[in-house]
Length: 231
Image (cartoon, rainbow, N blue to C red; front, top):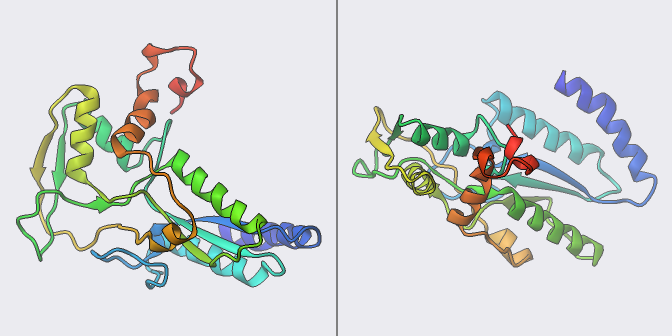
């Protein structure tokens, strides 16, 4: 269904736009398209096609590249996006486990079995991501040529342990964190060097971003705030 929609409808809309102002196409992809690695992921790192979600994004990137001309295509591969109202993803899931007194597990790597931090992810606060994309669009309007692919991510990778600890600080609770079975074979860490060369990213400090993102989990504090009712 996705491929039919993308090829049949989106392509037509893209060609229609190309007849007018040749505006750039900013496609929101994901850092999950990269092949798993424990190292920071640069834009030229190989992509994966053995995962349904990653494949869907890769196909979309490649399809847009075929039909984008004469417009410029910019693919933003966003890592670990989080913000108010999010559910079912890493940040809200860990928050809920800490809030409910459930166990949070970390898994070390084979190379470092003493590691107690667990999975590391370059989380990106949604307001920051919007700011980066706005700055890139401004560069385009100023006539600056942009790379086809740009990683969009936060300033530093955040481990499972740190995420749980920061959630605990917000909740006033001590999370229960233990080692899980097995070994970890990958992280999801962005190499931000290209983004930093293009713009001067203003990163919201992670504890501040996390508290702002999770504020909607406490609706009793302000029932008039529409974000407090987000799910």
